[in-house]
Length: 101
Image (cartoon, rainbow, N blue to C red; front, side, top):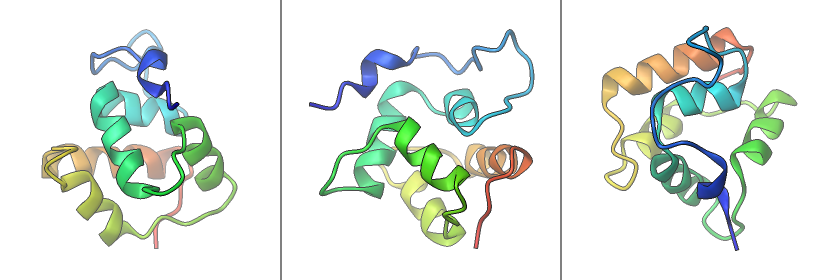
């Protein structure tokens, strides 16, 4: 069971009192709701379900995200993120030290 939906609010707040997000998880939660996060993670790892924490631990440990694929996955209808929000999420992730290739 992947209980990821139980861990997040459904709003687009950062959970840090409106401050600028400073972690990978906060970036995702600032631009995606719980259902969008679950849909993205299911696309990213379809055979082995992972949590947002696991995804972020991997990319914070130096696993570079392929930007073109990241954009495609986030734009997938099941995630439904706009290009503007995708750009903002990428900028947020880069600001917290996540690398794209």
